[in-house]
Image 1 (tube, protein in one colour):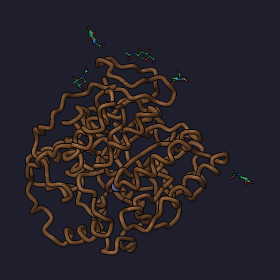
Image 2 (cartoon, rainbow, N blue to C red; image 1 turned 90 degrees about the vertical axis):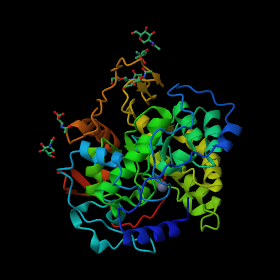
Image 3 (cartoon, protein in one colour; image 1 turned 45 degrees about the vertical axis):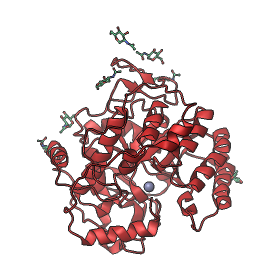
Image 4 (cartoon, rainbow, N blue to C red; image 1 turned 120 degrees about the horizontal axis):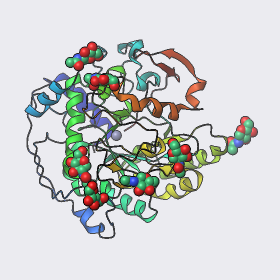
Length: 410
Ligand SMILES: *[C@@H]1O[C@H](CO)[C@@H](O)[C@H](O)[C@H]1NC(C)=O
Ligand SMILES: *[C@@H]1O[C@H](CO)[C@@H](O)[C@H](O)[C@H]1NC(C)=O
Ligand SMILES: *[C@@H]1O[C@H](CO)[C@@H](O)[C@H](O)[C@H]1NC(C)=O
Ligand SMILES: *[C@@H]1O[C@H](CO)[C@@H](O)[C@H](O)[C@H]1NC(C)=O
Ligand SMILES: *[C@@H]1O[C@H](CO)[C@@H](O)[C@H](O)[C@H]1NC(C)=O
Ligand SMILES: *[C@@H]1O[C@H](CO)[C@@H](O)[C@H](O)[C@H]1NC(C)=O
Ligand SMILES: *[C@@H]1O[C@H](CO)[C@@H](O)[C@H](O)[C@H]1NC(C)=O
Ligand SMILES: [Zn+2]
């Protein structure tokens, strides 16, 4: 990944360029040598696919906004019902990154980066649980992180960048076979609200397709780059059958980029502070970490043991007791309550959990996204969210304004 400022500069440049001039090209899958080298000890617990690096579909170049004029994107757009999507403006980020001009964001947008407004987003796990998440992978540093997670049988939610899945597909395959929860973090890591509806759909669906080709499963969870989400983006996610995941604890570990401003000691202090405060917790947490640099992986490995002693550390779907983070109902991942274990259930449903099935069509609507209602309720129960002022969002759901905090994160 490129550093934050250059990413943002690129975004501005792209926002000024013709939006749909990019053409799809076949990306050659580069050998994931680092993974192969250190992967020998990993024993797959889920035999999901026999992917060998030969992608069947054509993918856009990495790091560029996904094109909207390819046959695949046209097909995806045709399959979706976008009738109810809020008509909110596309908001390019400014070249110094944050904030995007707050005056350009309508009050009813429920924009998280500008106002911390939450609307059906997952931000916390239930009390006692720690939703362990790593963003921006897979990368050349992933094998070290996954090796360490294997040593403690720890599973995490991995929010993947589609372009990286193509390049580091062996790490992606290893991660899903290990029982980590794979999820989508867009194709090219541009802020969601800076994309048109069509661009955003292309960014999510190309990433979903790449993961499907590698692992044989279809993702259902999403995290927006920079946490950048508003009600337009939420509507698009809903239409595609996705659950949106933000966080309540941010390590700001990405600022440890080479030459970055943050030290490992500062990240350690953050963890120490959260652990010290744990006795007074009213909710669990969802933490933002990255598998982006050597430094972020080092900090993740160093701090995980103390976190494991303080909370039940699980993937986000697990803390929500959702055994099906993928559309395929025959694949189950372990949940917190022990009703499900990781495995392939041969298509037979194991319905001891109250979690309902996702829309099988991908055309989620406020009804078919029904599994989000219990999930959100569980995530919010007794939550810090309830302490802030409430207002009605454009989806007609109760939403919460936590105050105007300009959070800029990778
Ligand atoms: C699309 O969704 C709208 C409401 O959001 C609904 O009224 C309409 O019937 C749907 N169209 C189709 C073809 O499902
Ligand atoms: C928990 O809250 C109480 C009351 O506000 C405070 O006295 C105590 O120091 C807090 N404990 C921790 C570990 O933060
Ligand atoms: C399993 O699910 C049931 C019903 O949701 C619940 O009562 C129970 O506590 C869960 N856990 C175990 C270990 O059975
Ligand atoms: C259903 O869940 C129970 C409890 O975890 C387990 O014993 C059983 O093997 C599962 N059945 C299938 C078909 O996965
Ligand atoms: C799947 O189901 C079929 C028949 O229902 C059975 O013969 C087979 O052993 C099952 N496989 C697994 C892995 O459970
Ligand atoms: C799981 O279900 C999908 C269809 O949803 C099917 O393609 C796949 O073969 C199934 N896998 C197993 C192991 O049964
Ligand atoms: C919306 O949800 C309802 C109720 O679950 C369902 O009958 C309908 O088919 C769904 N519409 C779409 C477009 O998925
Ligand atoms: Zn990111």
